[in-house]
Length: 439
Image (cartoon, rainbow, N blue to C red):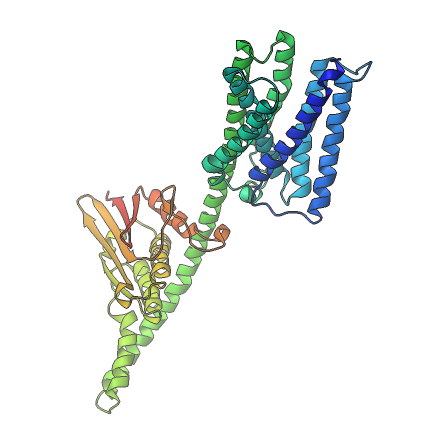
């Protein structure tokens, strides 16, 4: 039992820890929706954490016959605080236990790192206990949260974690939580066993190791999030490809029927050409030619795509030009050709239709052989800023959860046939280039 003289300092530290944990968890859980009665839930959780800390602080300082030795009391106090932090995350925010474990672990690690970095700086700068120490602790906490936001927060979205993980493969997340728990348990035991004080070199080394170990645990948990996200997106992209296959079969039947009808209509137009109303007949013939004349690439799947997208472009006052040798696409399945070029043109149409300048409402597509590669090239104008994420343009739609998989499908199909996908956007022109090796 330590003397009553340390009671005030310990109470202040417990209060700081509770507030710092709250701040760090807000940063880690930003984007999650609050549960009903959020304020009441948070107040109850904070009261429970204060009560937990108070019980063990009493055992540590004031109890004449404490339950355990100081090391055991410290372990129970902070390990319990860690678990309560995870529970608070789950109680107050709309998330599953996987996201709560990730958020609680991240929040606790951020607070722990801020505290240990403060001790390292205090020892290095020779700052005595007092207001200087408290201001340094607050500054380190703010700095750690800022660094997390700048380095990690924009790359990992906790609001998506439960949707991506579905509770599958959380081994790395549990490993990170176990690592955080090990830091909580082992660090005080080492301090007490070795009798280390703040300014000793051994204490500085221990704090450095603790910070590095904690950051490693956080990175491991984030890797788990990225793995779950990539796996889920791959599943969704695969489902989209299956959907594209079914849609291709239906559209091919429709286009074949339209082509037959177009052939009949052209003969009827030729027969009626001398009767009059030549302007109307020429307009009908122009519409018929969309399907019957200008889209013969000697690849049925590509013809289907071009037929439907050409009609779409006509309705949107967009000029689509295509120079393609469809015979060179024989190494690809028809459904994959449909999905690949359909997604390429859908993205281009979406970008071009936002332009007001009619002279820039152009889309150019080409398929030709270059040396030992089949080169697929598409160019179109765009407006605004195009942000790239891991080599792919980010969707501009407000709801990003259900969009952006078209580019994922393009990348998957490119990789399926051993191709190389390159994207460039500069000067208001977007360029897509795919090179497929020719066997």
